Amino acid sequence: MRNRLESLSRLPLRENLVGLSPYGAPQIDVPILLNVNENTHGVPAEVHRAIVDAVQAAALGLNRYPDREFTELRGNLARYLGGGVTADQVWAANGSNEVLQQILQAFGGPGRTAIGFPPTYSMYPLLASATDTRYVTAPRDASFRLEAGYVAEEVSSSGANIVFLCSPNNPTGTALGLDVVEAAYEAGAAARAIIIVDEAYAEFSHAGTPSAITLLPGRERLIVSRTMSKAFALAGARLGYLAAAPEVADALRLVRLPYHLSAITQAAANAALTHSATLLANVEAIKVQRDRIVTELAALGLNPAPSDANFVLFGGLADPQRVWRGLLEAGVLIRDVGIPGHLRVTAGTESETTVFLESLKRLL
Ligand SMILES: *Cc1c(COP(=O)(O)O)cnc(C)c1O
Image (tube, rainbow, N blue to C red; front, side, top):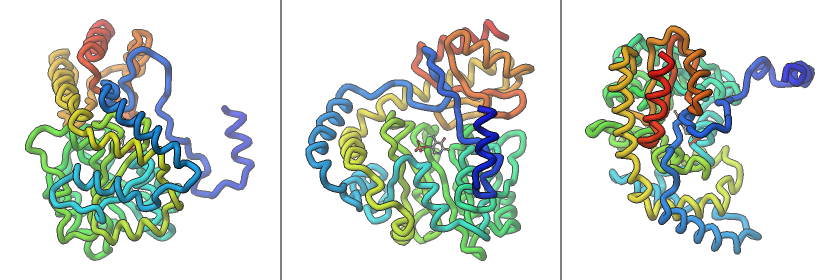
């Protein structure tokens, strides 16, 4: 790898990519994978059957390009979101990472600035680099929460053109109040800033946590992004989407590659969405394990952050690397997100969570 990096530095790489490392959560083959916030319950049999049938039918037409406008899929996604969202307000791509990249391609770029509130999703600065967008940060306090006044101040003083608000936030699990989104939107008015609320984990929120989708009417610079990778248990299918003003979708049509969503992807996602209730059936079970992790880690004297997602960030570890390695030896892979004294664990099935908690107890 070292030699490869040296030879990479001899290539005429774009200046703002020099020295960067690719996104790289370790992919290690162990029995219990709790490191990248996947849905560990697997695809329900009924949904599996529907996807296989739909993909089989789509395969017959693979000599033709797919529907460039993924019309049926946009309709199904709008119906799933509800709240008055219409198909022309929906856009989709190969994972919400691609959706975010397209937003930066359309609204970022040289001379433009994006702002994030770390600790937050590690892809934001990488997507900014890849699109020549300057990335600035305003840190969260020790509680990881964000106050409306602070966010508004940072949005306006940075003059940001793009604002990343992640709610519930990865890796902390913190949900944002809608007052924060509203304040960011108002503060971004002078720069005509695009406000992105990344709601990849929205379905795992505690009851009563509102979605920024409710704020869309009348806010043409607001984008709410979602994914089928987490609650829908379809990380491997690569389908992310957003809801926004129809003009936002028109902007993304300028930068998307033609036919970016394959016929196979569209067929799989459409089939899954017609069974969304079944797919989401495991969300409640995951939330139970998430809350159990918070309770049990606190009882162990650790410091778990309250979470509205399907994972828990916990602090109070004297030597997180030792704990991470010890868990790995016990067959449990979790994530070191680079916050001193902390690790992050995905809520698994009940038995996976039990193995994690008991292995951790032994290590402490
Ligand atoms: C997992 C995750 C995504 C989803 O990525 P996909 O490309 O849709 O798989 C988006 N945002 C955050 C914060 C995430 O943690």
